[in-house]
Length: 394
Image 1 (spheres, rainbow, N blue to C red):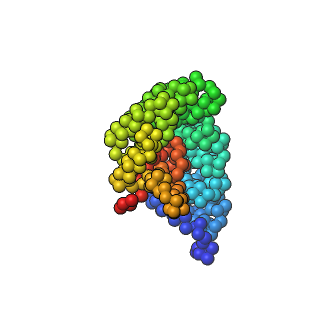
Image 2: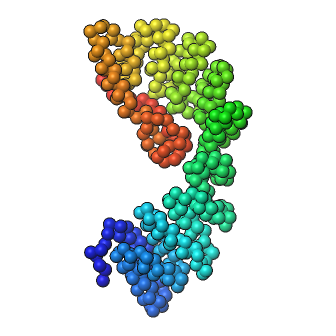
Image 3: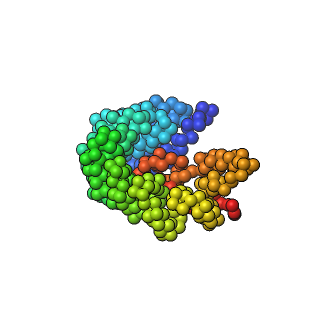
């Protein structure tokens, strides 16, 4: 009988394994009764060890079972996944190393075991060993998407963008729409490295490659615009920035400050104002209140800026707009302290409010990332549009 007094919380994770075991036992129902009886006895003996936290003894039992009948290998895979899920990588590794080292291992199971062992090493943080195993899988199965995807994860973690590109290009041939944007981001990483080194030729080469894999790569356009800006080619920079509207209009708010600098350097703020009004009309949810206010203040004065912002806030309330309006509206010396307090409170609220959200997994953040820290998808974190605080009036 089972010693239930020794069942730990960990043991509850064994129940999925029990389902697998019962299924395997059903498969053996067609075999002779003596063999079925022996298998049943050994299975339940192994389960008894597991439920009593005697994993070593349980593993010995299951290893003997797999030698008798390799169809029971699913039990090992299930057990290994349970260990891995519980963070017990050493035990998962021991299971899969034991399988891969068996002289009688059928060739059809080899790749699967190598993958599982690779997952174990990946979970343990041993990227070099995991990399070697996934590469070995590719030698035996060149079409293994799982091996390639995990190699990509390793190379991303190690920031080895050249290796990541080599692996991703093969997947691109099968699924261009998904892998193209990812490869483009790798080339953007290389472009930023080239920029840091002052290698402009390589920067331009990598951004060109990025756009060849993903014509809607906003990051590549920003890199090109910023390079033109550094070189004093403000009109070229403006053209790159403006092109982002056709790539991903949500990202336009990322480059408004840079565009303002370019137009200012060209003494063309009136042109920028006209452009902003047209952009706002084309995309009503695009948040342009504060940048339009800044431009209006410079070309028409504070009165025009306050008038525009007051009207706009009634249509589209926002913390940023309120804070900007407060800096204009209260000028009386008796209300200055109150004004400062309100501005400070609104500033704190603005910092706490999430400004970006991952369109893939919903991760919220105040900082813009190209690679989502939550789901590891590239280029999915976007500014929140029209997601402002709700106020009935100002």
